[in-house]
Image (cartoon, rainbow, N blue to C red):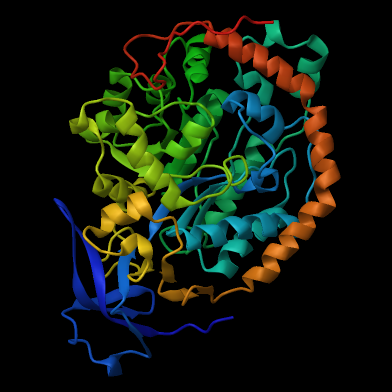
Length: 517
C-alpha cells in the first residue's frame, strides 16, 4: 500500500488546460498540495524543496481525469456471455428471474475490476449505478464502497432503484407474457422503496456525500417507466433535501418511446417535466431518442444528457443527437455503461466511439463533434452533470488533483501535433503512466500503487469459477422470459414513432420488422 504524499511536484510536464474556446497545452510546473492543485507555474519556477516528491514531467502529457458518468458494476460476472441482444431482451439475463446469489467478497471483487480498468483507461471518477437485485444487504453495499476506497477511485454510487416489478416496465405484457410467467415475475422479491431511499439518506448523512467525500452516494431511480410516479417524486424530494445529484435512464431505445406512449401518452422527458423531476444536477442517461420538443424541455430545465456511444452501439439502441443537444446549450456528459454486458469500462474507448459514430450518420462534416468537444464532455461535462463542476474536470489551481499523465514516448503520441485529438482517436490506455486521484498517486510508473492488482484479478477469476454453474443455470432459466421479451420487442418495433424524433438508427425509425412469431 502506498503512503499519502502531502505535496507532489510534476516538474515541466506538458499540461493541457481548458479555455472558453477549446484546449491549450504548454510546459508547466504543477504542484499538488494534499488533494488540490496548488500552483501551475512556468517550468523551473516551483522549487523542488516545496514538495515532498518531485516527478520529472519532461516526457509526460498531463490531462484532467475523465468522469465515467455511467457504469453498472453489477453485471461484471457476465462479461463475454451475451452478444447481439437488444437492451430490452438482454434484461432477461441481467435482471433474471433466477437470481445469482453472491457473497460480499464477490461483490467487492466485481467492483474492484471496474475500478482498476477505469484508472487504467483515463477515468478518475466512476458513477456506479449498482443494482442490489432481488435482495437488500448493507453488507454488500459496504463491500462495493470499500472497493472504491481501496483502489483510490473517486466514485459516486447509486442503486438503480425501482419500485415496480421489472416485467411491468414493458408494454404489451398482458398480451405477450403467459399468465403464469407474468404472475411469477411480478412476485419476485425486490428491495422496498423505503429501504432504497433510506439507504441513500443514511449514506449521505454518514459522510458519503459527493461534496465532501471521495466515495459517495447519489439518487438513481432506474428509469421513469420502472418506477411509480410517487417514487420518482420521492426520489426528487430526497435529492433536493440532501443536495444530491440525480440520474435516471431516459429514452435509451426506440422501444422506450413506445413504452412512454403506452404508459403516459407523452414522452418520458415530458412526463419527468410534469412531475417536476428535471432540474440542474440531474442527468438523463442515454437520451438516445429525443425529439426537438424533448431537447427544448431539457435545455430549459438545466438537466444534462448522458452520451453512451459504445453501449448504444453494442446494444443496437442508436446514436444520440449530440450536436442538437450541444447546440441547444445542454450540458453533455459521457459514460461507458455496464461492466460485463459491454466488455468493460474503457472510458477512452467511449470517447473514441463517441467522436467517430456521428461521422457516419451524416455527410455534413459541420455537424460532426470535434475531439475537444468530446473530451470536454467526458471531463468537465461529467463534473458539471453531477454537481462537481467547481471541483473536478479541469486542471486549475484550487481544483482537485485528479490527473492522468500519458507517456509522450508512446506510439499514439509520436509525433505529437494535437494532444486531445491523438488521445481521443488513438489512445486506449496503454500510454498511461501516472494517475492521481484526490492528490493521491494511485498509478505509479504504470503500476497500481494502492492494491495488489494481479492478486485481486486472480481472485476474481476464482470467484467466477465458483459461481459459473449458477450463472449458466440462471441463463438457461431465463429462456421463457427471453422469448416473451422478444415478442414484446418485435411488437413495439411494429409501432411507428413520431417523425419529429431525431433518427437514431441509420436504417430509419419505422422500418418494417420481422414478423412476430
